[in-house]
Length: 296
Image (cartoon, rainbow, N blue to C red; front, side):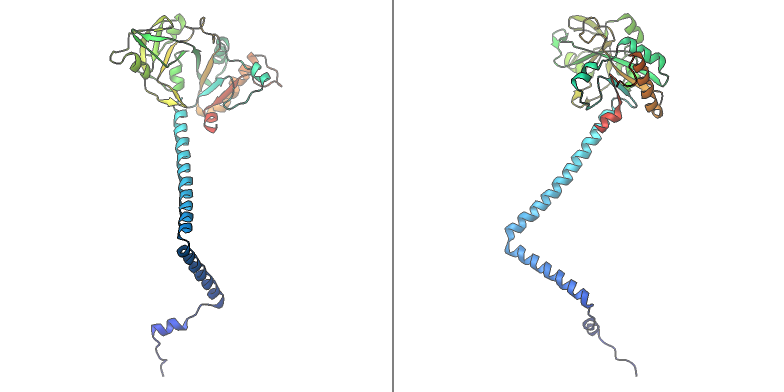
């Protein structure tokens, strides 16, 4: 005799979860019920709690997005300095020097720069920079309120991957003869030549005349420093008049990014020998790369 067929409702009623699972389900249902009852009883407190959680999550998410954006922006600005660049400065980025160590530090001079060019085979281009404290820059009745003036050589272009948009850059011949020429940034052009072609015009820097031979391509800002309000003149033009005479910052490009570390060690060894530093003495100069800026 065939077994009687039970209806769906009968099968559903006949199934029961195991005893352990029943306790878990009852506990969960009770917790949900208590939570809903608390929300109904204390609507203001529940609303403020939910609001606090939502605001906390939004704040963390927003801050994470801001930090990620700042990191990308800073990395992009650092890359704008040129790829695979080695910097020689007074010290390392973020370095805290003791008074004694501060007195030991020295910037490079022209003789040391030439030694690096001659002896360092893993360095393909060396660009010394001489920062000039110029107070007045003007053209006719127009005056430049904010500017950065420094002396460079022809290698500045290739080291920093920055080129002129119009005209030409400073050449080795300009440096050797101390030519009174200048390359200016786009902000300088906007301030001094709002409706005039700047090439061939003569500006005065602290009373000394310089003919504009080139206009740099737009570069933007780097850590608050505008790279477009710059004036570049041949290295040595202001050397006798500047308090920073014979004190040079140096930027270099290795033969390849793969030889970056080897090039740094080669330059460090050459400078230490040139300055007669003993093996137990620390470097009295700072040498670093763009990675140091990014890490900082």
